[in-house]
Length: 121
Image (cartoon, rainbow, N blue to C red; front, side, top):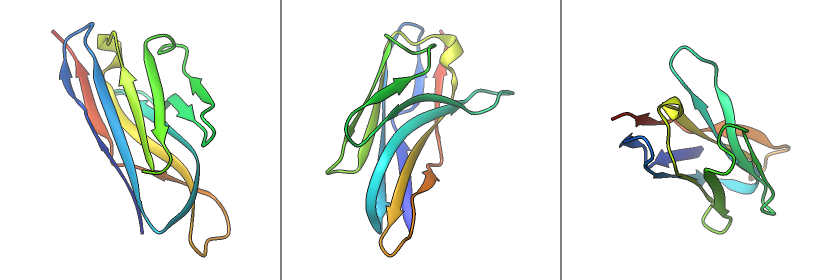
């Protein structure tokens, strides 16, 4: 059984900052990419940022220069530092990990339950 659990969401004013955290637990043999996605009301889920086990990052254009993704491989955790938040960033943020379980034969994508971020004055 694998679980991804996010934390750190909440209500913040425009221009403020939040740090999201996600931890993976369970019978995990290896994790390759980890990342964050978001889904705003009435919209499809979209990629926010990803990071490989080697530290290579990829960002959506809308968050480049404002946000930073990082990870701790030993702790199986991924973080998203969100600065200069805008009302358009309001969404549910989901953690994602491509991982292989013990006795598994391939990597599969796993998702957290989501954490809500609301940017409003």
